[in-house]
Image 1 (cartoon, rainbow, N blue to C red):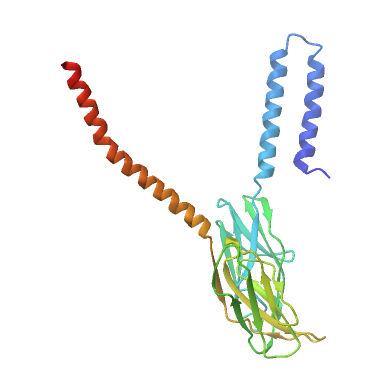
Image 2 (cartoon, one colour):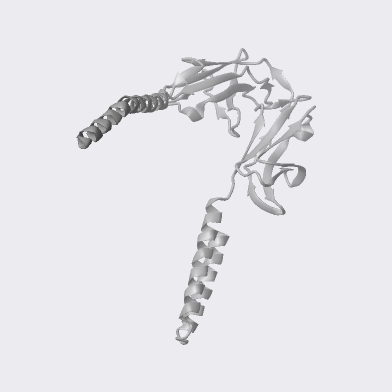
Length: 276
């Protein structure tokens, strides 16, 4: 199905065509035809640009994971626009409003009533510009011991390297999730070893990671969230390119400083010989 703006555009084109067809019988109105065609073309371009530049919203929990009863967390909503306001919804119920390009909605002393599906709307005036994905929030009693998260080969790696996260739990028969702060999705780890391999890491893989485990049975029990670790991905290719550019600029500056006096001297010598 075509987007609404495209359907409207088609209707405008059809009306414009009918208008031009009518004017073909009137040879004294060519300027009117040209003006109408220009205006319609400009309108279509504006509609296309408006469709392409529609803002997007990211929504996530900080810190991520299942919230313990009585615990706290923050629902974060981010948009690249800054002239509107965020409205937080739980299901179809409107909860809170904040202005700006980032909004943080706190949940404290959490109860089971705080569990549910949340999403953010971004408004300008009364017009909804964008809606976020749905964020599932869970509040549970945490019975399992806290797992430990480690990363190999280390906390700092170069771009293109392979990284392995390991979430270690002392409780048998558990599965674990790997969280990256700022992301709505969690990665399910391997049941056998609790590992997750990240191949050819890039700058976008940098961030704060944690994990959380649960029992694999009918009555699911959760652990607390593990320790956090910060993964730093260094792009030395970019760093080297910047260094080379700076070195080239410095070399050019030195050449200009050396050639400057020589050029002035040559000019003076030419002037003296001309007088002779």
